[in-house]
Length: 278
Ligand code: DGL
Image (cartoon, rainbow, N blue to C red; front, top):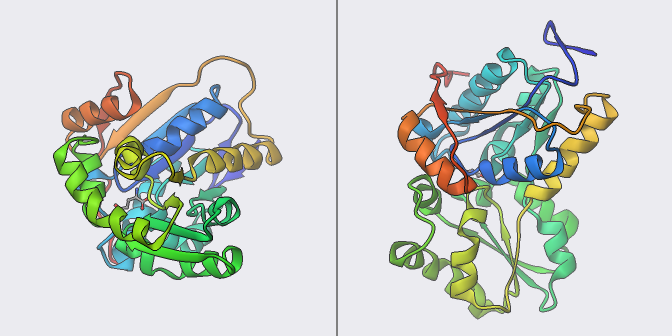
């Protein structure tokens, strides 16, 4: 048992996961695959999505408020399933909450190890592309690789609307992929948790020669490692409960979430007061 923010947390407490919207479900499904016994609380901040073009203090404010919401409901660990929030405010979140916080990082390191052409692309939101954490990752892990970060505004909105294929998606992807492929990129990092849901569309457009790497599975492993170290892994082989919350319209978000997860899920509306003044 551990004491977090005045509460007592134990192995049966849920894992809290959040994103600006439904993209974090790509991380959630990896957590469920690796840790099926865990109860999971998911918060998608869909009515404030996308975070990508917002000022840092806004993203910090929302991330703090949503983390508070999950902690109030007993989360034993928080997974920030949002690259944008990670790159903007992870140190501040860790300073504010004593509960363990697992963060995203674009998969630059495995991509640099995997590329044969020595050229990789990174698709991410504008905020992540210009952030210092991506620059630091590239400096640290891809010194001898040509890295082409590509801001991809508009893709998050498509996934939030449940549009994963078709002409509109192809029109959005073509101008992003074309220049990267022309440079000779053979590996693309999906640096936003919404983008794994566009993997098939990216594959279809780019052809079979392109490797596409995301961080969902690595984050699930990291979550398992942290829980194991803290003695907080839920024992047993039973199936954990999943509870999904949104700041958006429950019915619409529920429909899109069911589509993304490939199974019928119910989402509850839960307003989290704006906390953007910090
Ligand atoms: N899924 C978020 C990410 O990983 C999207 C951010 C946004 O809302 O712009 O970056």
